[in-house]
Amino acid sequence: MKAGKTIFLCQHCGYQAPKWMGKCPDCGQWNSLVEERAPAGPAFSPGRSFGTSPSKPVPMDTVEMTRASRMATGIQEFDRVLGGGLVPGSLILIGGDPGIGKSTLMLQVLHRLASHNHKVLYVSGEESIQQIKLRNNRLGAESKGLWVVSETGLESIRAMADEMAPDVMVVDSVQTIFTPDLTSAPGSVSQVREATMHLMFLAKRTGIPIFLVGHVTKDGAIAGPRLLEHMVDTVLYFEGGQNNVFRVLRAVKNRFGSTNEIGVFEMRENGLCEVLNPSSVFLSERPCLVPGSVVTASIEGSRPILLEIQGLVARSTFGTPRRTVLGVDYNRVSLLVAIMEKKLGFQLANEDIFVNVAGGVKVDEPAVDLGIVSVIASSFLDKPVKGRTVVLGEIGLTGEVRTISRVEQRVGEAAKMGFTRCLLPGNNLKHLKGRDAMALVGVQTVSELVDLLF
Ligand code: TYD
Ligand code: MG
Image 1 (cartoon, protein in one colour):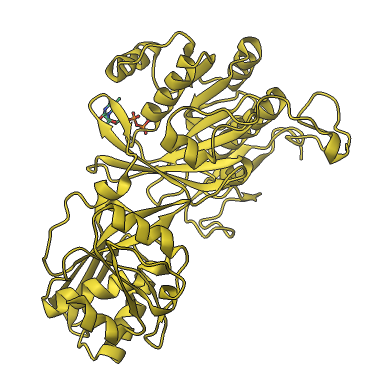
Image 2: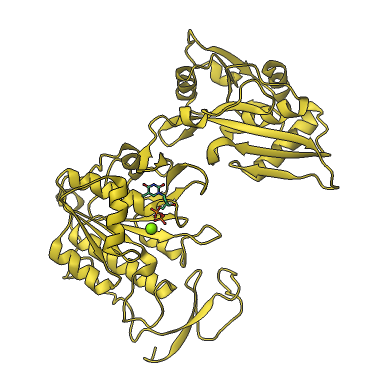
């Protein structure tokens, strides 16, 4: 491509076109193509490697681990989501809505590391050093090894990292990082992609783990390119309602660990606090013995968490009844409602149905099916579920209750939280050891469930 020529780049997916178009043919986004100067040559030559000289293949068994393999931050909830600590040379993207607490979390993580005698660098492209200091005072943390800088130039950041050689580095946020090699504005696809690419090389070459903070757009994608997610090693999302004090850190992609782990935090006056027992938090405001509420256990990564599911069934005033679902899959709920109509004979066609998982949590396991059916039945019949009961199980299309995984752990967590009765798939019961404090009741079909619930 000749220098000086311009191309049109989709700001959503990174698609390139020689002419402007109203709709991106790749991702279908409208009005997302922006004119940018084409790079003079290929951005990355084919021979480029993480080091300075070209790479050579080596036998796997001769590869030596350089540093201690993982660096724990000391914040348990954070370490678990990372898969047990920071891997040297990894690039970790932290996405989340503005104001959710990404900068706060990063600063707290760095403080912890600095207090363990690590040298850490916080690069902010959004706040001045004075503003970072203000936040710092609020967190009430003081550490010697924490260095801060307010900088947006990609070249300066790379030079800084080479000169200072910190143990860990944070770049907040990737949308503010800028390289004059490209003509487009900071935050555009090419700038964000370029910055990420160079920071990736930096991390791999120097072995410094780098955190990249990224803002999320209205529709939930990390602003600009989804491509970013493919480039980095780990993608973490920090989520939770603006009005909700609880924040959930979730791994969406992790080259060095499981993606099912979640970490729960609470936003307080003086920063984020770990919530080590999420079950008690999610159940803390549960109304007892009222229709439309039931407790179920979901497995998040390696640990079970008890969740309250709420349901409300109300006579619809419109022709088409509403189905509003928060925290569980909409289609799953529609399917379960259809099973209830067919197998239980419930007349739900004229009823609005609302289902919600308390605490702003999202679950996508089929093991909560039984909980969803229970709350809808409970609200429809206006009967509360019997006290101290937990329900577990997946429901099939013929109304059968199907086996779920890791029942032992779920039942254990329920017993720990003071529940005394558990409705679970009949087949699971066979392989389960009896417990003194917990009555285990096997359920084969949904119609059996309704008899046992109330
Ligand atoms: P911030 O980390 O700036 O969010 P992000 O970097 O994701 O945009 O978090 C800002 C919010 O957190 C703000 O609404 C105030 C709140 N907050 C507290 O409640 N307590 C605190 O100690 C701090 C530092 C922030
Ligand atoms: Mg911030």
